[in-house]
Amino acid sequence: YSHPPLCPQHGACEQFLADGMHRSFFIHRKKCQHGGECPHITDEKHSRQYEHPEFCPTNSECLDTSKDHLFHYRHLPTCKTGPIKCLLFRKRDPEHCRSYRHCKITCEFGAFCVNFHDQEHFNDQLHPFYQPCPSTPFSCR
Image (tube, rainbow, N blue to C red):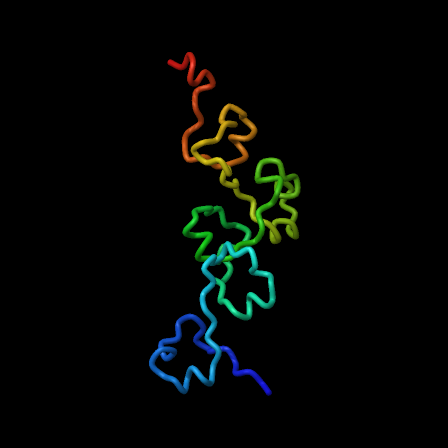
């Protein structure tokens, strides 16, 4: 027994609802609810059941960390050392630069970050506010 092939139109198939014959001849995967940020994207069984977005066209050059962009595109992993500290990135090592993105990651605490006075932390991660005065909140003028 052989399974029917995937629909050649992927997620853009308009015949799925209208044509019962088409549905029986082709497999139509559902779109994954997690999009490009799916934690199971490398799981073979999951990938057979759900459709995931294509890789971002800018590949390792991508600096867009907005939720919307990350949902609509798959991305290379972000370098753990970040764009400032990564020596391989600064040396422009081609293999490393093709394998990882070098953008600031978003601080997990967002607007409630308690490390906002830590210069290194503030430089390495994105925050939804400008860097505050070092004297905040006690003697800022």
